[in-house]
Image (cartoon, rainbow over all chains, first blue to last red; front, top):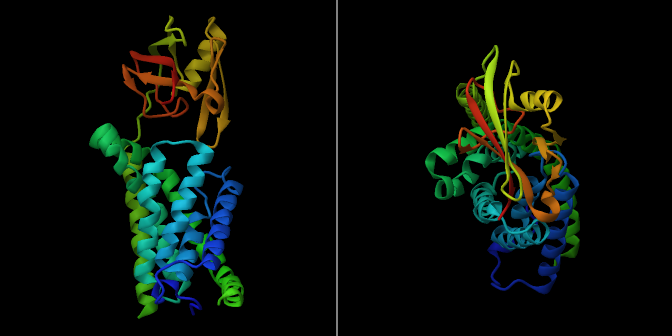
Length: 177
Length: 136
């Protein structure tokens, strides 16, 4: 059950109410990422972006953009900024394709696949920097981390998506105009 | 039907993981047993070079460098980070990636290393360069 389908609404502009909500959710995204930064490739970003997309639809791209900007301000401009610029929109686009599904397993499998192919997708940038061999080598070196990423994404969505949706259902419904 | 689709998805993920593990195992650098001769050249921030020739039974570069630290005037220090051993000091020259974006780069036989020093295998005749570099 999706209480607010902002992507489907008639109004094209984002209201100030939604803008504040999205700003808060961006801060939550960054804070939770930083809180889990010490564990390599275990991150809450995939889970939260899936969750946000279920509520904000394509507007989640704005949250992702603000998140990338925040990350750049904290860590500086680097190659991963380029990767983030297409990686997170890909996730949002994929969630948009399956957002009619109510099954937590569907999202868990998407999160697992996303984590597993995270390195492969990121290595596309290295195609232009280091060529095909460099990109392939970069991806293969990171395979153990991709597997860890995949497993952690899977369990995070399995255990947390439902309670978080519950929370969002209550909170966003109460705040909705 | 839904259950079947989920199971197929789950199986597909497991198959992908198995394939990825296979690729990783098949392509990972192979170690060599026994004694190996190698050369380490340290290039500091001013471009000054110091070379060391040694032999080791260690399988990985980190072990060989620690051994060299004990047996010569070469010195190395670092810290274990989440992604592996990060070299912080070589021959007393310290890098500070957080403040100045400086780091010790590892070159293996003239090419920029693809592995950390704890996972870089030592093979007979290898030539390593530890170069003080600044990230751009």
